[in-house]
Image (cartoon, rainbow, N blue to C red; front, side, top):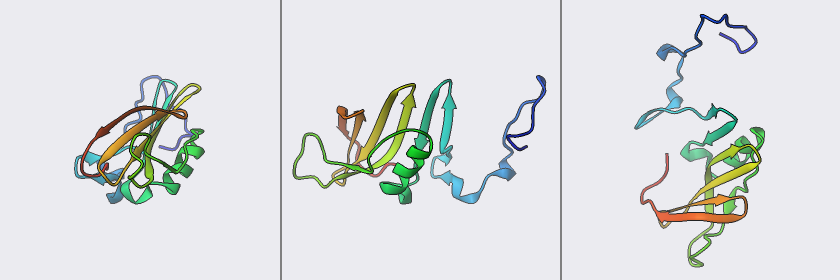
Length: 122
């Protein structure tokens, strides 16, 4: 069903498993790149999209995040790459992954939380 088609009150628009593309699955199952929860927007980028490609996807959704950010607490770590962004009204949240396994979340320009995740985000 195309977005331009109107659903009646009794119809439910649910994707069929056959409509999924092979590239939409991860080890933990299918992923949704853009989800709308009320007025919230969530963009999760695939591993090969981390950084500039993810920044572009976020910008297309109206969420402003730089492609990379320095670690706020560790100077000896390379710049982290953007892998997820969220928006709730006027507040943007940007998620960055660092080579040492840390993941940091920024609310606007302010680091909110950083923790060791290990591995790489999917």
